[in-house]
Image 1 (cartoon, rainbow, N blue to C red):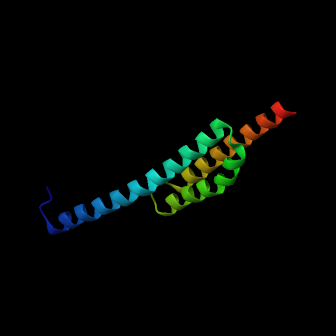
Image 2 (image 1 turned 45 degrees about the horizontal axis):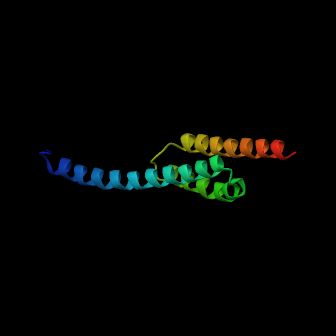
Length: 95
């Protein structure tokens, strides 16, 4: 347990920040899971419409300092690549 007033305040502050960070991280992960599930199930048009929203949530999480901006860029890039590969394979199977 904290002994000084400063340490008590820091503990309260850190608890609030931890909750806030957990909210943003959880929201981002949920959006990513939804997107990956759409691609996996072959709902590519729906996923294509959803991608900008997912990327927005990822960058918003980075702006809050929960994740690093480079991590946000990497996650967004990988999701875009995932969709593009799925669209490419879908076009090959149709053509």
